[in-house]
Length: 160
Image (cartoon, rainbow, N blue to C red; front, side, top):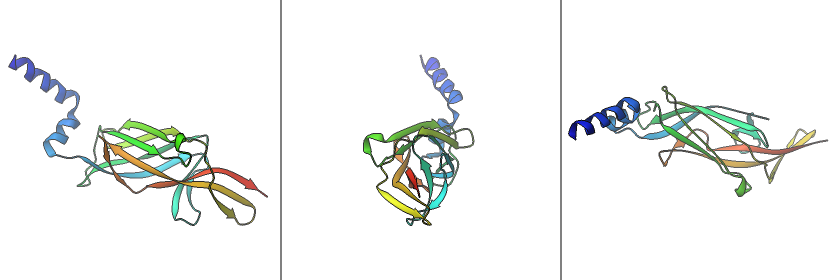
């Protein structure tokens, strides 16, 4: 029976080597470094509340980045989840995935409709209606620190 148990544990370590590494080092996910966000109407803009990524309603958005432990080491093969808290709460979205062997992730979700509670007059030729939406990352139910904690969610644009 001990041999069977040993063989089972050994097979788990071969199938899930990163979990074995995390167990050996005590490393737990601590932070996310978002390196890019691609979406309709994307880019980094400043509507007066600081420079943030902008995502447009009704289109897919992809957040790419890396997952690190508290020492700054990359965390390969770890679960990661993004929570997009829409201004219209029932429209909140979640994207889940797993980091690759280099600790990198790519999470895509469908951006829901925005409410457009705030507005920005773009040099007198258009007005952008948007929301500032919190973005949260977790791994193994641990809330992670991140360089991106919110985005501008573009609801619609009115041109003059």
